[in-house]
Length: 267
Image (cartoon, rainbow, N blue to C red; front, side, top):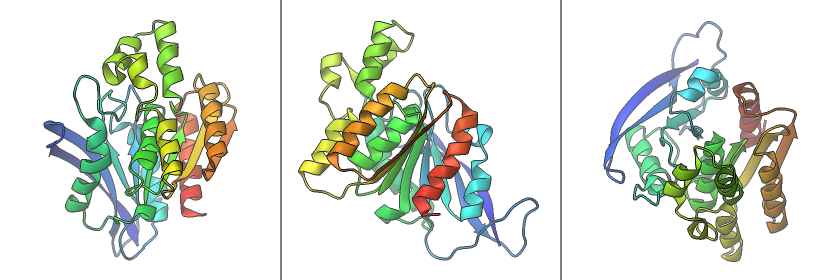
């Protein structure tokens, strides 16, 4: 039988120069089952999902607001849930290199700490919601040698449009986004824009990641999602995009992460 071990990991990042946190779910082979579980035993290295949080959250939120441990146990996969603070998985304008941390340092640290995690590109999925949806697609498009697939739930995929919307509406996030991405001129056409990364992969004839996206039709990010989905399809990406009634809430993300796992694993 397989049960899940939950590890709370506090570690130091050389890239960021500060202590970081992540929670990790690892399949544990046992001789006894667990009440209410249907753990699946699998040999060899574990497929791994890096599960990213949104703007107002941290590395604990997926466990607190969804049943991700139960879903992972039933599939025999590992789940890495790191924190990024409010940095949009980006090398920020104010100098903190969160993108370098997530795309390079974190996968290396995880496989050193947990050698049972597979290092194969096709065995690693980046997934996330809202800000984390942006980060997930960014990992697959910008670090495709490490991540073979990515899934976005209610993702901030049109980052330029979202930046301009916050600026136009003078939201509390407007000055924060400027500190992260710099000015509007610095953001547009930069590697922080997902379409720039997507077009580069096509032009360089490199392996394209599999992509998945869901967004609710009442979500404030819905129109931006539809815009990016259409552009990605024009570029020839293997994109599965879903929409249904819903807004920016956990009850939808908890349901949709199950569809993400089925899509990724071919269920």
